[in-house]
Amino acid sequence: MTASRFQSKAGRLLATGFSLLAVIFISFSGVIGGGCGIYREYLRRGELLDSISVRVKRLEREQKNQKESLAQLRAECLTSIEKVANRIDEVDAEVIDLGERIDKIGRRVGAWRGELSSEPAAPPETAVFKPDTTISGIDADRLYNTAYLDFTKGDYQVAITGFRRFLKLFPSSEMADNAQYWIGECFYSCNQLDSAEVEFKKVISSYPEGNKVPDAIYKLGLIYQLQGKTTSARRQFNEVINKYPKSPAAKLAEERLKSQP
Image 1: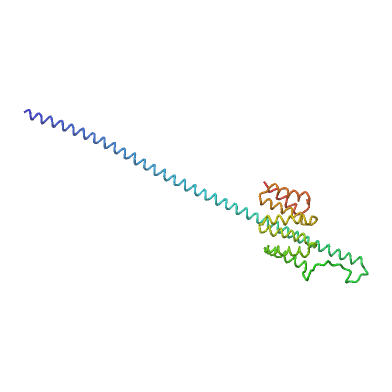
Image 2: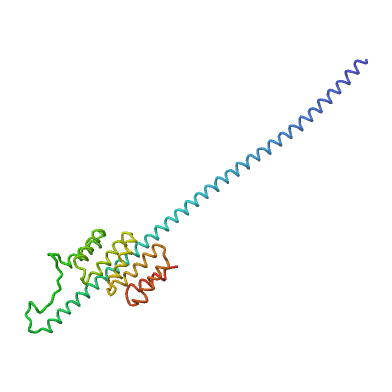
């Protein structure tokens, strides 16, 4: 009887223990399950942040590439504009040079006509004075025109050689100052700014009364502008405007001053 009661009590204790263990297990399983859910949410949000970070970095790279492309495009546009502006200046100078040559020819023809009218009795062969423009069979006009044609074709080194030869053979020619000026233009077109500066200064110093002085002063302003010497450039432009206000170079200088910051 006693043994039976003991067994019954032990059974109840075991049942209670198993019940407690079941409750503990269920609770522990819930905690573990909840922890796994939090961990999975943490992983999901981490992946989302990584994805956003990657997209931001990609956008930053694309923005950087676009800025670089725009900067390069802007530089190319400015270079093209500068080339066009320089070419316009060259064309203007060429037109001016042609007009000056025509004027000089006209003055020469007028002088010959004056001599003809002032010497009615002179024989035809002595009535007209014609300056000597040939040396050892070399014609001054032909030499100058050939060098000038080389310049217009872009053969700058050949043109420089031709103009220098012209100056050596015909230093007192009416076109000497023009030849000296075009030597400077050749170097300027080759972007040899230091050499161009030297040659343009020779126009001013060697032919102070020549009609290419305003253009030479203006070109010095352009050279200083390209070299970043803003103050010197403005000084040259103002000099053209003040000393030669009616010259085409003065008008170009005014436009350059307006465009300067």
